[in-house]
Structure formats: structure tokens, C-alpha cells
Image (tube, rainbow, N blue to C red; front, side, top):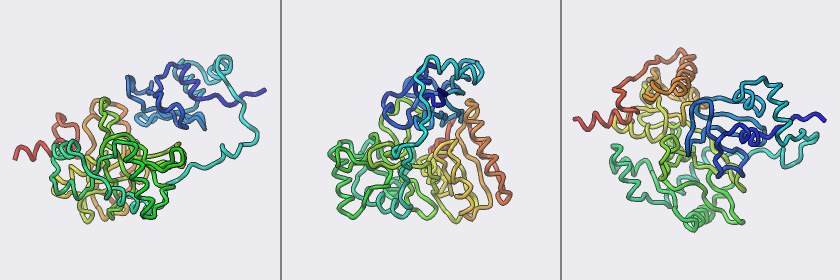
Length: 354
């Protein structure tokens, strides 16, 4: 018999990767990345897709399959890697006919207009806890801007989350196809960690998705997570949507990472236009967003950790190359005192000095 399928999680275990036990029942299991130095408790940037047996690091971009993972980590050829895995790992033949459950397409989000309506109603039923308001004020936002941007706290109890889902359903929302919602023992509920919600908007102010700023921030690289119910019953995946904030009529757009960073920097820079990607490797939709604006200049304002982290620098170089393919924009780089990691930190220091 010819064996062609080698489970990616089995291979990861054999290679000694640290797995996030909370994700072991999901289709995508998270692990620490051995290629970019992403080691340590709570650092899980490597995604292991159990359906395709592929891996990809969301930080450094390393990718491949079970065989190449083993080969790369053990310094052997792909042929030798396969032979060793076949001898010592549970290996399964590929099915001749895919079963219905294997061919079921992953549920995609409903339309932008439907998401915006559902999320706007969701936010209208929530409040902002004092601890989250203090966090936003410390970043330099005003009370008025906090209210206008509609930041809200996640419900902290399961009862509150079920009630919220029930309220939305009573308002006529189906919730099937809205990232973040899923059913649990037949009842609709909202899924996600505790923290506060950050609306991620397009140029017209429509909410594309929501990001959560987590309360549990022991790991600074995992402070933010998309509101998603991927791989859950009746759940829906989220995408890494590009956030637009500030004066959309401006001819100059500042390019940075993170919707909250962009909101703060835009406010501190008197409503300057900021276009914000979800992560340094999340480039889908970036150039389309810029093309949809009337900008003639793009100013790179990415974090200063690019000076010390090669994987971040490489990702930014790839982003820069992608944007510079379009000759319609003048492309420049905004630099500041590297003592301040982000453009928001730097602008806040300037405002405090005035």
C-alpha cells in the first residue's frame, strides 16, 4: 500500500513542537514556530491545518507539509523524512472518494452590509468597562473619540453572551455567517476571549469585522485576536480585514499595523488618514483599499521592532514591494525615535511634550 497522508499534528509532536492544547480539537491547531524563534509559553504563531496537513507561520511565513516540516527540522531529505515518518508515525492512505464531511466548504462571512448591521446592533447593546476606558484614555484618545469609535467590552459571562445573541436574533438577525457567533447545545452565543472590541471599518465607515484587545496580555505578541467562531458549530471564520480611519479625502495615507494603533495615531495627528493591516503578513486587500482611496502618497509607519526582528523586517519589505508595484503613489517612510515602538507611542510622546 502506498501511504500518502501523514497527519501534521503527529509530525509536530514527533518534532518536539509546543502545541496549544486549547486548539487540539480544531481544524487548525496552533503551535510555537521553530523557524523564527517563536518559542515560549503562550507563543503560538504556527498554524497546523489538520485537513490539508500543511503548516504556516503567521509571523515569519514559513510553510510546507508534514514531510517538509520533518525534513527541515531534522536536516534530512524529503525522501528520508517520509520514510522515517512512515515507520514511526500513524500514517493513513488518502481516501479514494472524499466523504461529504470532508468536502463541506468552510462557511464564509455574510456580506459587508449584513455584517455591519449585525455588529452595529451588537455594539449598541454593549457598554465599555471602566478598566477598558482607562486603557484607551492612557493611549491618548479623548472621551468623545472613544464614544465615536464605538469601542465596547466583551460580555464576561456565558449568560450575558447568550442573552446578547438572543437580542440580535429578536432584532431579525440570523447570525449564521456572522463571525463570532455559533451554537452551543442548540443555543446561539458569542464566542471569544474577554477584552474590548475594536471595530474594523472600510473607507465608508462600515464595520467589516471586530478585533478583541485581550485582557490576558502576558504574551505581548498575542494581545489582539479577530472575533471569530471558526471550526465551531454553526460558526464562521473571520478574515484579516484592512482598517481605514481618519480623513478619507486626504491625499496622503499612513500605512501601519493594527486598527487600534491606527485609530490612536489618526486622532493624535488631527485625523490624518491611516490604512491599517491586521498583521505584517496580512496583505490581502491592502492595495485594493489604497486604490479605492484618492491618495497620491503612501507613508510607511510600521513599528520600530523591524530594526531588531528579521522576520518583521522581511515581512515589511514584502509589503513595501507590493505597494510600490503601483507607480501612482509616491512612497516614503516615516521614521521616529526608535525608543518608541509604534507611531502611536511616538505621537503620544509629542502631544505630552506640548
